[in-house]
Image (cartoon, rainbow, N blue to C red):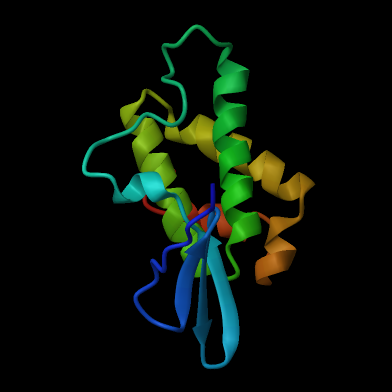
Length: 134
């Protein structure tokens, strides 16, 4: 038995590998989170609903941890911000409160100094994500 590899990228400057989208822009490698489930023609539940049988703190911590994972995979703040805003919108439809999400994300980002990665003042990145709502 052999493993067959198929070329799936459409050009020579970008590809998806595992959970990363990798592109070359002006001679610089850029990364962002890639989830092949986004390409499916139907909706997939990725994180629990607020009314699931888990503690409230665990629910919001899972959203914050996913936001941190997005930041670690994204080389630019704009890509990370767009992905996290999509996550926030999806979680609101699953019963999450924006203020609780903002507080949980702010806490984990401060602990892991995400603002330093993107050269943004403390809490500035989280405020940019939630600027419309909170």
